[in-house]
Image (cartoon, rainbow, N blue to C red):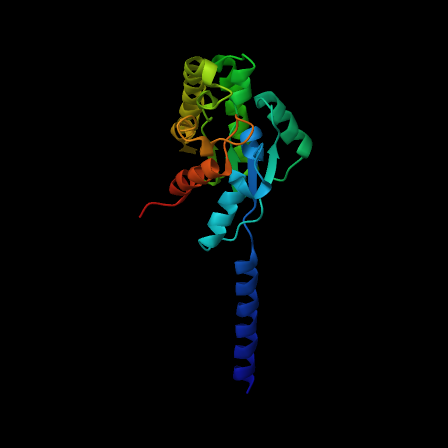
Length: 221
């Protein structure tokens, strides 16, 4: 009887532990600008929200994303917002997409480099020092939108320069990098990929991003 009682107690403890383990959710922090906050699309079409939903469909347990992003932010403004938020360093997934406003406001790729690297180091710290829990998304090319079309070649050239900077820094630090820029260059040929403001990606475009991001996040077998 005593042995059976002890076994019952052990089984109950194991079941409670298993329930607690499976109920723990991964915290997702998305850092960026208008592309991360989803300017001109409904909240459920923002790419961080779409990503969390897709990961949950595939059996992961992801919290609704905490988004620190505002339309118009440069790297320095994002850094200030992160510091002011006083965030814990326990995020299971952290994304970083920033730089288009540095380019748009005539900042140079050279001045962008150290600011981006500092932000990426902050992202790693927020992920508890785990680089494998961080990923970077490339800057979209708004030259392929009605807004950017008149200066498409100039914009594309500059976006390529900025993306070369963030790509090389990300690679040197051994962090996952997701290139979505080529997808955004479908915007003029396929108007459904541009939001109603004629500048930002539509929800359909963000869905294409999710396919790329999932490929980067899913371990190869």
